[in-house]
Image 1 (tube, rainbow, N blue to C red):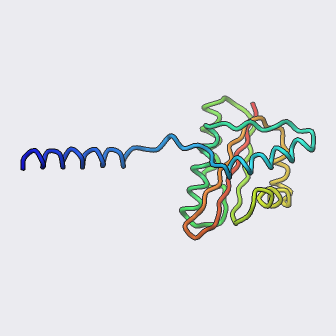
Image 2: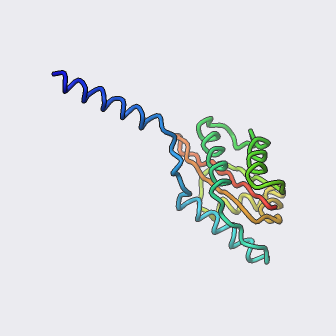
Image 3: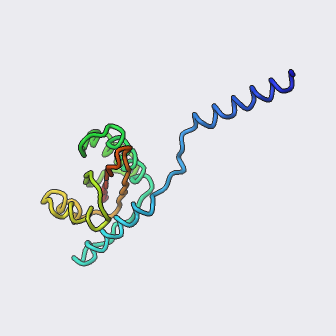
Length: 152
């Protein structure tokens, strides 16, 4: 009986430990990369450089997309200054940009929505080198998108 209780307690502690660990092994989804490919195809047609995916920036984009999805709010730029500060601390001073949106659609439709807005289009076609792009689906089925841009 004592041995069984010790095993049960050990298992419970192990499960608690695993559930409390932050998952830092996330990586871009196929959908994230599909949208990025659409963005880069558009940029390449204009003679602009291909944006390079960066894991650090992607994690910030992912966190913001998750925030919007969990808040079930409209697309927003809440916390943009903090994201820019983290990027500057990581890479140094540079130029930043951010596009956000929400809704449903294919990668081509997400790109078309950003190109249909003057400010989003300017950012998407801006002089940037690095990017992180993340799409997160809320419980109600709405997708939330964040793309962060950076150039040093």
